[in-house]
Length: 483
Image (cartoon, rainbow, N blue to C red; front, side, top):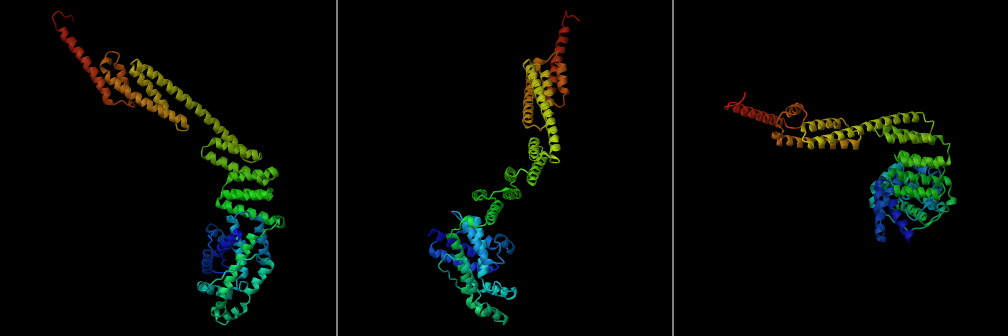
């Protein structure tokens, strides 16, 4: 019962995807509406998630149709039978999107076979189908009870029924009567026949069972490869994995098949996944030079991109992998030598940067000692030296660059504290030993201390010295003073 339900649902979706070569788009819509009413009447849920996939299959262009179902143009009945057996053989516990797509392809071929005038020349056939487009929404469609069919006896009968009125319809179009005669009177019956033929074929696929060994290996292989391409192109990783397991379960893997799968991943820009497949090829066929060359060239390109981005370690790793694949690659060895030279130069710059950081930290430490001894001018001189060292450190090495910026922030804070100390202790620092230190500080234009603060210190020292001179002068005027 469940299989019957699935068959009816998928039949409705297939109706929505009726091929343009058999019926026009307006006829498609009419058939979809009728199918929807049938589903609603039976209390079933439409398979809307598969309808788009079936439509894609049903609108497959004729050139692709022949690729998917060999013999579709020359012997459609045999081709339909072969496709039915194939789908029965690969059918799993569920109808996946690619299976739905193949049902759509199969439905297209059945619809083409069962449509009136499908084998006639385009002149009157196209006129007839254009008239069908204008009248399809005014005719009833009658679904019948589903049946498991034998395509070899069922499909020729469908063809004969479709051809019953062909001569009459053609003569009426040639006579200028067109759609007003037999074509109009038989449309409901002809459209319903197509709906039911497609539905019966689908129902048989979903109900029947074919032995895998009875299906040619080439058909099974092509089906699985097409399903993989279908899912890879969509980026559907879950279904890709399922299709790949089906490949393994059917024992279809060989170097050529794995190479094709690798190419699919490569074309989809899933390069690492492609490399895995190419490695699997080499595990089975180590002498496949086409695969070796592709692996090596890919990793050389990866190395070149990494090198352009300044990612030296990634570049070296990629060139090594290229050489692992192909030791005779014409450029990989030279590129590896070049990047290793760049890495060595970078290591030397890193060592120099770390030495500069150590020097700056040592200068900061000495400045702290002088600050503690209130030897402020020497402390400031050392901090300025440390600042110059930190400022020479660039951004090439992130950790060291951050440490240099942190050091600059410490020095800025230290200089601010020293400025405050100089201002707060100006009186205590006046005297013979201070003049040269103040002049040195005032001469450093890059010093962050405010210039007015330095002037205040000098002026205060001047006032102190002037007061001392005035005091000594007054004392000299006192009686008994010595000159």
